[in-house]
Image 1 (cartoon, rainbow, N blue to C red):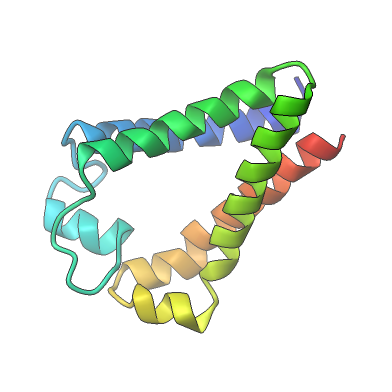
Image 2 (cartoon, rainbow, N blue to C red):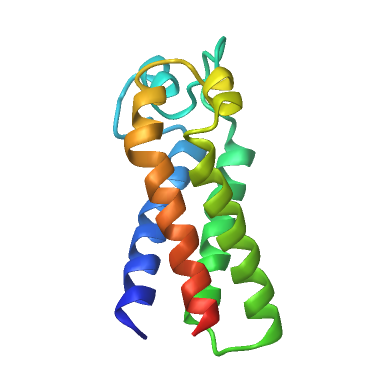
Length: 134
């Protein structure tokens, strides 16, 4: 396993753990659901975290990506990683697109998205695509 693959797996695992916690109703790292919604959802009018199923699906998807990074090269591995890399790269780029900014104007999400979430998604996506390419 390369350093890039290790870093990707550790970061993706941390994000999967957060989504798993949210799926079971643990509002970490903020203990108040309303504050957490403003920090990680950012959509106008949102007052509740996404339900257990969406959060669990994100966590499961991230685990599939982690397992694919670790797996031996194959066509299915490439398809999974190219898909994940593309989705994360696009999600990262959205942080600076006016359409996305209008959809998610709530603070502190809007600032966190431009400074943390967007760049992190973009780097994860590019990193995954580099793993596929090598």
